[in-house]
Length: 408
Ligand SMILES: Cc1ncc(COP(=O)(O)O)c(C=O)c1O
Image (cartoon, rainbow, N blue to C red; front, side):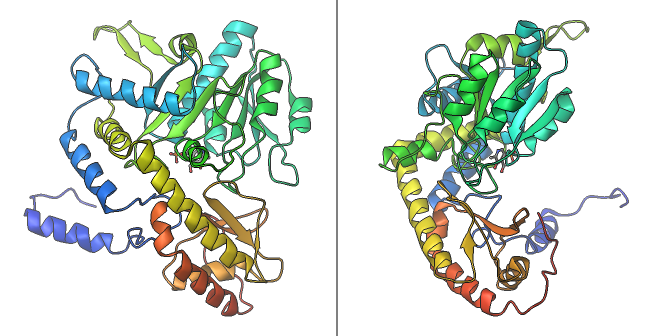
C-alpha cells in the first residue's frame, strides 16, 4: 500500500474506520464468547475516561510520571491482597497474561541458575497450560515438558513427580486453564516443586480476578493462591475478569528479592545512563495502568462480587441448557467461567458453523473437538437465546463436516 501523499479530513477518516469496524465481532451484543469481557455500560464509561486521561504518558520512567508509579504500585498491592500474598511480596504490571508468564518463566530460570546451578533448564507445564509457557520456553531457552492430564482433565500429579529432574526450573498449574476451565491440583504440584527448591507458578490469568469473588460470595474454590505453600509466582489479568481494557496484567512474586534479582533488567553500558526495567517492553503505555487502577477502585469488591454472581447465573443457564440437549456433552467439570462442550454423535464443528450463521462466535478446540465459551457478566442477558440457537444449530447440523477453520 502506498504511503498517503496527503492527509484526509477527520470526518472521512472516521467514517472509513467505522465502516471497517462493521466487519468485526459484535461483542457489545454479547455474541462473542472470548477475547472481550463485557461488563456493561457503566464500566465502559469509566474505562473510556481513564484511558483518555492517560493517552500520551509513558510508564517507562516513574520519576517523570509519579502518578503512574503510584497507580501501578496500588494495582499490584490490591491484586496481592486479593491473592493473599504474604508480607514481603513484590510485583509489577505487564501488558497481559503472556508477558506476566514470560517474566515468571525468565525469573524462575534465572533463580534456578543462581541458586541450584541449573544449566539446561526445564519447564514442567500441564498439556492444558496456555501456549504462553511454550513461548516463554522458546524465548528463554528452556525445554518444555508437558505434564499429561488425568481423566478429569487436571494435571496428573504422579506423572509430574516422575518428570521432575535436577534441571527443572519451574512447575506450573492453571487456575483455571483455558481449554476446559478446570483448576489444576495446585497444592500438590506446588508441594512437589517446593520440596526440591523449585519455583512454582499459578497461572491465574483467568481466575485471578474471578475466583476470589466466587469465594467471597460463598462458592467453594479449591486452593490456588499464595495461601498454598510453595507458590512462588502468580499471574492475574486485569484485562480479563478485572474488566479492564486490554494491556493490563499483574505478575507477583512471593519474595521481593526474586523480582529484584531475577526479573529486573539493569544496564549501564551506554551513554544514555542507567537503564532499568521490570517489563519486557521499554516504553510502556500509561492508559492500561490508569484504566486498571480506575476499574478496581470504581467497582471495589462489592462490584466484582455482583459481576461474579452474574457470571455464575449465566454459566448455570448455559450449562443446564447444554445438558438438556441429548447430543451434547460438557467436557470435564468446569469450575469457573469457561465451558467446553462436544458430541460423540455429531460433528460439533458443523454445529459451530451453524452458530456462526446465527451470529455467535464460539472458539473451536481439539482433543477432544469442542466448542468453547468464556462467560462474561453481560452474557446473562443472552444465555437463554444462545441455548435456543444452539438447540436449533444441533438440529440443523446436517451431516456436513464443519467448513470453518477447525481450530482457533
Ligand atoms: C489461562 C490463561 N493464561 C494466560 C493467557 C494469556 O493471556 P494474554 O492473552 O493476555 O496474553 C490466557 C489467555 O486467554 C489464558 O486463558
